[in-house]
Image (tube, rainbow, N blue to C red; front, side):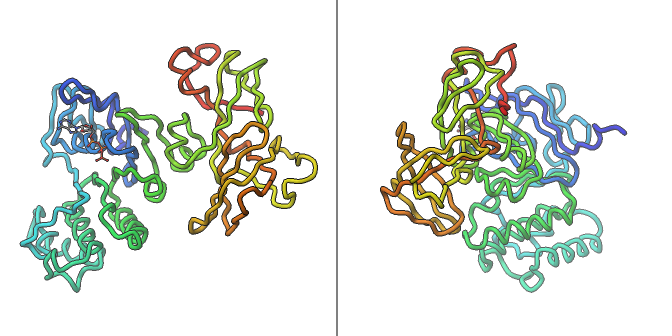
Length: 382
Ligand code: ATP
């Protein structure tokens, strides 16, 4: 089996500068046929530029783009946008205001009149716009306009659909439903999709594969489950939630923290280490009221802390604590209404299997904290 032909879109080491500023540094990613991949990153990190390069409206300075194993752009080749079989869907939908829904969908369709009619009718059914086919864009709601734009982008059956923040102009209440409906249509069409977004929840909901970028560099690629549960750096972890940070310094292949000891066999003696814990992985020992002896369990040491404040944020409560022993501020999320008063004392600990341990970011820049020249990676401990 030749795996190369099973990759619909492949970017290898794409770099791009505007003036003297390098915006993209060695971006690589792959999308399999029929898969939805997501380019996730903060504003200005280079997502739209990457999309424009894939579409062919911008040219990279270095690197190769292949579609179905065939080079469409490298130092020698530059296939024009209309020959790449790539569709585009923008944030503002960019519908033609003087054309009706069906005329918008028909735009760009080629082939016999019969086939074009069939394709339009098929798409009108899929996006549930048959009753509105004679309407003009200004007569439609935001959600309906999004569906017209989607149908128009899919009409010529592109191999790849590039979607640039396509849900960001929609009403919050509608967005989840529209995302789900869109995903169902994309799957039905079996198109490969690269969706760009700065919203982690959107990427988690839509994508089979996420490429996380920061400052024009890929910092991690993986499935939503992998990337959320096994971040390779503090930046990756921080992208998906708030983080609690507990410090320790490596001494004798372990660190000693307020929440107990962690083995650090791969780190150099004296390395400053951060243990990161998401608020939802903190444990509050509700039964103890902060009294009695320290609770112990397989998660190690519990710490006594005082509630600073608590608030209910919809599906869960967020409680902020100050630890007694070393004044650490720790946030815990509880999936219920739990609003203890400020000053309440409680024992707290966290799930070790859900915590991440990395050498402190500042120190990483001055020396390699890993023994045996290992690259930066997620530490394992027992
Ligand atoms: P956003 O989510 O805000 O749209 P983004 O991740 O899509 O951001 P890009 O639009 O790709 O980011 O822009 C990345 C950087 O490149 C920005 O600093 C932007 O100002 C710069 N940039 C983009 N296009 C050009 C251009 N044609 N000339 C100069 N600088 C540009």
